[in-house]
Length: 332
Image 1 (tube, helix red, strand yellow):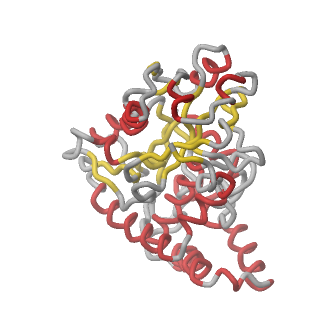
Image 2 (spheres, rainbow, N blue to C red):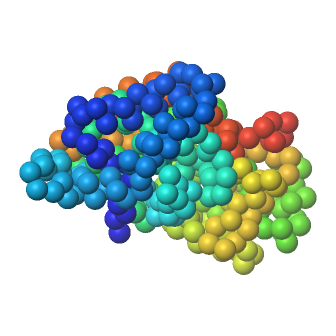
């Protein structure tokens, strides 16, 4: 299934309008304190020109006498993430997002927004369509074949082991050691919620995917022997709720109680415990796609600008991924 891209430059490369969007974002990053009434007025006008869906139609149907936009290229992300991204975005332009919290906010959703902003800052001009992917393995195959130009969210560097000739990495969004995950279970599992030490956790059962190399290796390193391999993420919470396992690993959330809801199942973290994941995370870029090298160059330039001005960290903090509520929790 494909979704219409919300990253869609509605003006041909080099036009004043495309440039003004990029300059507005750059100005906001450099001087966020200048959010004055005049800025708000300018933003409202910009938003009206670039309303949700209008730019997609403009790129696809330029009208009589106008140049035809370059063909769209495909990016891809997990189906559940792209659905939440659309809910989070609503009618907003992703380049206008300053607050990464709120309903449907989470790390993956924030990264889709960051992809838009980085490509815009880097000067990428071509429209992207986002395709839903049922699994990370499928996404890696599509990127490796050149059918898809890039991922919409970040992946571990270790995820592309053996595919380095087909898949390249953006600059890192998450540095080594920055990724912390919660041990999520259901409220009725009192045995899991009572865990206080690593020895307690080692007596529990966990769901993961052996193709998630870093997750599987981390659980092995911690000595959690009862690991069940499940390929479908949305199935995992249902299995935990059914009592087929005690917990799963997930990033912390921006919700008041750190809870996570997936496919109608509400999960909460085992209080006081967190797991540190080793490795760096990156957007994946196709080395086989004809425009892959250019996209990588543009994306890296934009990510560097976002990082320098604190936008990536801001996104992770506001989405709950870098979570102040768990700073004092024991890191296993």
